[in-house]
Length: 163
Image 1: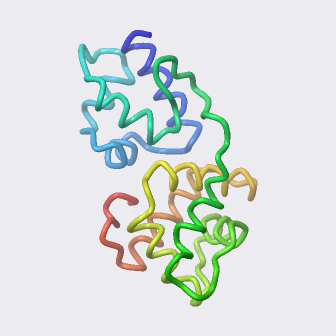
Image 2: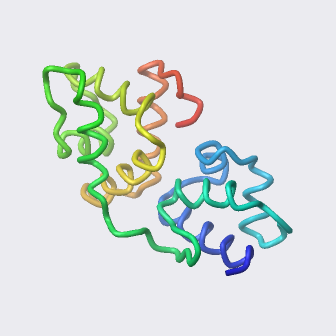
């Protein structure tokens, strides 16, 4: 697979997830200019590690990335379980999906959301956003706006990552 083909798959998947180029660049650790070059097919080299980084955030695999995600991995469940380890009250995947889709966090789950946005691996959060948007029948872009607002409201350490 060539770099321009990878760039096309990245752009297609990014749009499916409702991510802006700026947000994907932050999430994957690339500069926005590098991402633009990758998506436009004008980038001459990216390197395996950096390519894998952006593909991982999007849920795509090498060597043959396509513009659809790898098989579903119950991301809401994974994120909810990750956040529930240290707290007496358990966050259910359904509640997490509702929080992400609505942008409203019941006070009992504020610590859980803080943990998810500060500690959960980025690819898991990306998949959870996709899953929540699908379950709530809302555009992923709306859920991403909610994530950005939550991160800002809850004063997360990684809040710049989610804006």
